[in-house]
Image 1 (spheres, one colour):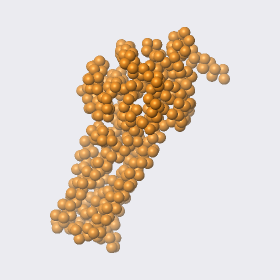
Image 2 (cartoon, each protein chain N blue to C red):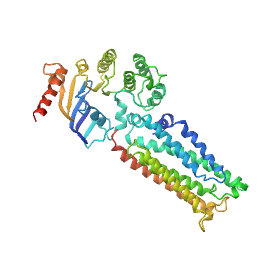
Image 3 (cartoon, each protein chain N blue to C red):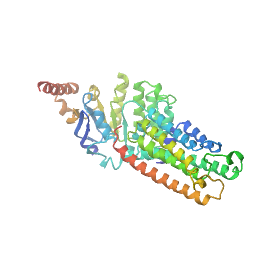
Image 4 (tube, chains in turn brown, green):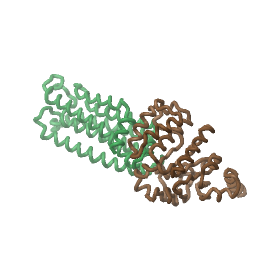
Length: 239
Length: 217
């Protein structure tokens, strides 16, 4: 069963085009969304979350159209676009207290557990946290309402190696419980440890979407991506 | 929607917005353009937009499990909540000044606008200007509020000027009369302003919702 289906997503900016991006995330799997900086990863994820207005394309979660069921769909998914970048001077406790009123399945016990696990103090304000801790706070919010699908934009960047490893462990744990995860990253080594599928985007176009093995063809994930990027660069150079 | 309105009041609206409701008491100042009180109430709401931009409020709200269009609706609802609270205060103070203090010497010799239903009508028109010109203008980008605020500033002072001028024109002296003798002519003016406020705010909200759908955050 597909938890997320993206079909022919297009968006035009001056100097950049997202062209007919299509891929799907299966239930209970982890998909890595990879590509170099500026390839269109964040734009795609924002478009999926209806934060960017697309010129064409269809996005559906759990078989429901995003545009028509936005509120209901967001109850079932968690999104973290990097570090918490809002209400930086408000106590975390207040931020959580207001946020939880919007979710039907918010679990205070789960929230407290992740707060403790990430050593986050709810009496602090986000401005008092390091970038890595802000990412963790963002993840706490995404994880506390029993989301069936997590969409995470560069969740591991800014984290120290130990926290990164802990986060990947959490991903594995969530996956075992049937939660699907789509996360973008340019730290390819993170995917070796947990991804079932890869969607690789270059210059606003999906070049590959499918199993990890199909992408690597026996190489390491990082080597496979560098190799493909190098081929594309050499083609451009020859032109 | 209820959650969003609570969020607006708990997170996005600063204390200053509520403190600025105190400017409704300007209704009692004799020999002063008391319509400025309505402008200051709007200025208080404007503070929440300043804070909101610093706090990335729009981004936070869009990430919540709500429809994107409801984000806009909540902003209008929050502004309307403050405006209608202010209107109730203006109405109470107007009744006190118009009915019980109308014989007071300072109000009798007042050449500027007095507190009566026509004054309340102009209060609603200033609130309408804020909703249409400022909030509507803000949602063209969901970020820039400088130009919309200046446009509202000009509009509100034109309305204040109009309110202060009209009753000096021949035949329109009744616009500034106190007491209940002219209520028959003054109350329809207030009613008309209320209709304009409701219709223009609703139309502005719909336009802003459509614009906001196309904005990239």
